[in-house]
Length: 214
Picture 1: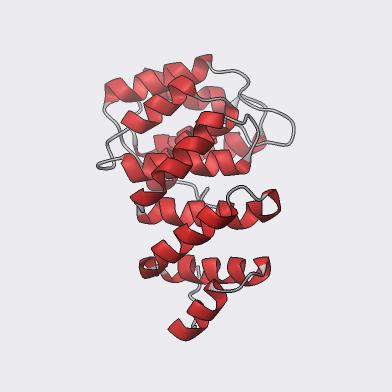
Picture 2: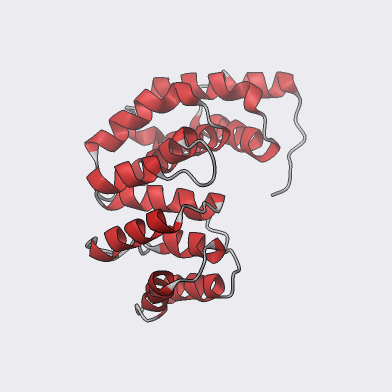
């Protein structure tokens, strides 16, 4: 993604704005340029607006940035969102993904993913699995098998208007050993009838990661 040239003074000016357009603009600039020095400012904005439904797009953007940079002060907010466990909600999915990214110790660690899979409805599960695909997480074979078994049993896997919940897992599988369980999972995705999921699974069978970081 192209970087935006902008001075620190301009960033601070936008951060102090009360306009959603200005705030979304500065969040994108911070994200595109990897400016983690502004994490505390973003956290404060999130804290101010987290209960404002009209600002959901801004809150979604901030949660994704803070999750990617591992800003752990946001964890209580993320926990509260996931505890509400709204079934079809982009904020909830983003919060789940951010928790997994913040709490993992390395790219083999799926403890938080497994915890959320045990308690979550559609959006929480979706976010947890997307964290694996976006960050190319490679768990132990035992944990891979356990997670696949969990998702095979999870229902519903897809609902009208939403991406298949298996997308993140299908992408993550690109870097995994292709044992029988992984092969069967990917083949199931290919034969699911969902063209987007099938495309991701075909790439993973060929050991190619797909981009779902959007």
